[in-house]
Image (cartoon, rainbow, N blue to C red; front, side, top):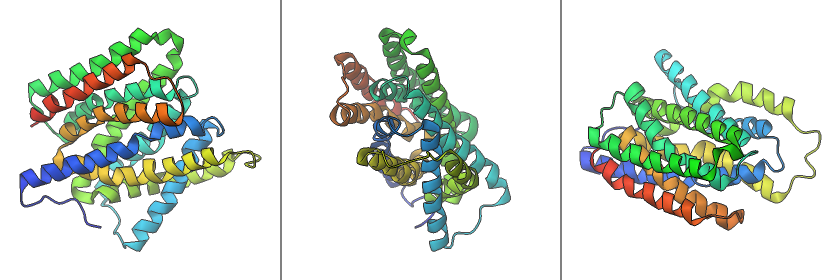
Length: 297
């Protein structure tokens, strides 16, 4: 495994970034449906800490196997920010939110992630997208928010507020991790962030462990395995590398595709109703990807 280094051909590097980013988005698309199934049988806080602990142990093994050197002293703060955003913040807040809303409803909020990531790309990554880029990004986000309001936020204001907080935490973690990936490497960033969180996550996993796990179904265990291995580790290997190669704000717009994949999974695996309005909004925000991509640089 190699660190993320610039390729000799800038166009090839950007293309590679979009491919890696797309793979990451596909992997992440299964996170909310899997979490929704898992929280039916696991406590959401326990699910959050145990998935991070499992991924953290795998990260330790990878770092040891490839004999990776420790990050520089100035990189540890960024790793803490990544850990707070994507190892603890987003998984915990979404797990809590999914006790109040369906995965199909929560997935629509993922459409706000490109805008949140782009904002933090400016604040933390030093990127400066062109003004027209923000028009497309805001348009896609407005479609998502408008749909949520049309559905009636009063139905579960707690769930929607938790999802909005999760989006902010995730956007910060994405931008911070992508910036760090330029020097530390994509897979190294998520592994070290998991290692930073491991002592706390492992301790909480033991403390919050249910009295009995005998009644947990195979489906719930499978979902736990997915969010631990793919959502917490493998997906980030591709995602951070893609953001570092293609630009945080630009490749971040691929997240507009995540609701489409997620809604399909929710309908297929969870048999949740996906309305025509959901599909229309999802298709609308997908159309914003092309425009945002064109004017990102």
